Length: 152
Image 1 (cartoon, rainbow, N blue to C red):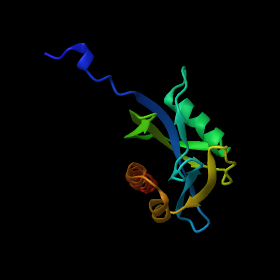
Image 2 (cartoon, rainbow, N blue to C red; image 1 turned 90 degrees about the horizontal axis):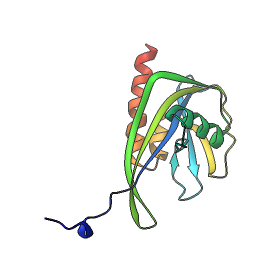
Image 3 (cartoon, rainbow, N blue to C red; image 1 turned 135 degrees about the vertical axis):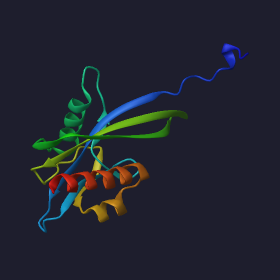
């Protein structure tokens, strides 16, 4: 029997939401918007914490607008995926789940927030080279496959 004082506290959890934005580039190929984060310099998709009272979709739309200035989106119905990963904040482990929605973006110029230092529209291959973590790479490969199959 374990005494309560010996039990480890529950690992904090955090939920975020964002968008994988795509467009048809000048060559006719799909391109994806990546953002380079100011802290750490990693590349990823627009996302952020879900605020109290927001749905996942509302948070994803708000975060995308705040981080890119893009709000003319055409979400792909019923296409969303979750990624899960862990990190440390103030020396404590945090389990994070991010719900990514997928949308075609009509605007192509991103207006960056102070959180990011760069943005670029890139092909799948370029995105896979730039993305810093495995979870977004696997997510993007799956999303590209679904988008292509729906376009047929």
